[in-house]
Amino acid sequence: MKNLAVLIALFGLLLSGCEKKTEPVATPAPPEPAATQASSEAVPVMSSAIEPVLVELPTEAISTWQRHAQARPELVLFSIHPFLDQIPETVKSEALAMVKRGDARELRAHGSFFREAPLLLPTQTLRAALEAGFFSQVTWVFPSKVKIDELSLETFSGQVVEAGFLTEEEGRQLVLAGGVFEGQVQGIPFRAVHPFALPDITAPALIHVDLGYFKGMYQDEVKTPLYDLLHGLAISLRDMGWKVLDVTLSYSTIEGVVSLDTRFLLTNLAELFRKPEMLQSDMPELWRMRAEALYGADMFQPQKMKEMHQKAAELAPGDATAQYDLYKIQFENREIDAALETLDRVVAMDSGYGAAYLDLSQVAMNDKNPTASLVLLEKAAMTFPDNPFINLSRSDILLQMDEKSDALELLKPLKQLAWSAHYHADIPGLIETMEKAGMGKGPGPESKESSQ
Image 1: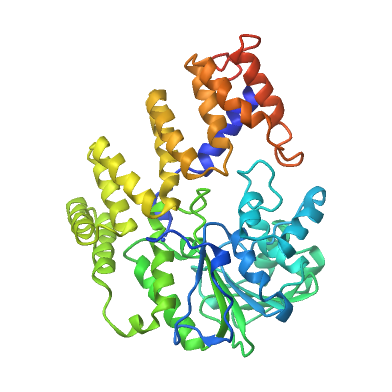
Image 2: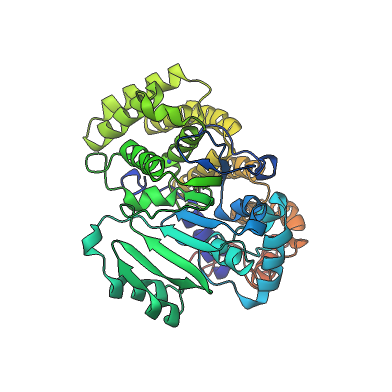
């Protein structure tokens, strides 16, 4: 059972919350990508209204990109990661078939590691789109805390080649001028751009913003206030005057890549895309209160932070972010029942916040309270039915509690799943081992091996 313990630990790590000070980002639940129509014509970004497509993971943006593939526009990507990881040969043909023709449901079902049969991981999203021939050019705007004149061609090229984003030949071909690294990736013109060196783009383009972009820009609420970063990006886009066909936004909080505490940024950015006239007016009251609360937290003024969050929650009972902030306060005050009730309301408004159930389940296990952990995991399983690892975790805990019949019931459907031979080759064996433990035919979760 050692491998299961490692897998469960990995699952918990990827879905655990992050410190706010290291993570810079929702209120309505993300709309179904398929329900959003491709723009009939390009419009100037942050000058004209555009309805952005919000998705949980970058892979889900592909269903929007598909609709523009024939025109092969340029993609402008704002992200801490370029999503250029290589696709394993064992799944590449199936992955590319899905990228070219799969619908939003299929992309959700196979576009994450935490699925029974992943075909494409979020960090492979752009690589797959390029191999599918979607784009004529890529501009990757990477977050940077250094000045333009401090950029190093040698350092950057070494990093992107070592990471596998570019081949050695592509790395050698890179040139640096004025904060822009230029070259090619898979024969397609490629630019990696400092945030203060945005290029002119005359042809209609697509824009994708991943929440991790703000994570890479953020230091603290004194040096780089989150709302200043949000406003700065919106103003930069408006001033560039790019004409865009569509905008996609990915939260990347559901797998723990970015903290839930910062999820609000992407929702607020979406509101600016819809209503760019907001850039001409004062900050909305909820935003102002949240900004004050964030500053209070960084300046060791917890009472101010709590007051602002509580006022915001009273002002906006239907705002998921305001209610999530209230949940955090209630939890910190050890008002556990109230906190969980609030969290349930939050998840009903925005299912992406359901990742908090997974965080809390791990807290419960650390507190040696497996019963509470199971309750939370059950909520998570209902929120994220596409993720079979949640029920695998539930089964493991039930075996530790010697609730063998319940564990076996959860394992039955898991055993029938078509687990990926590439990503999850060991899972069928783990399930079989757990079944034997549940039937008293093998070492149980309490064995020395499983406790590692």
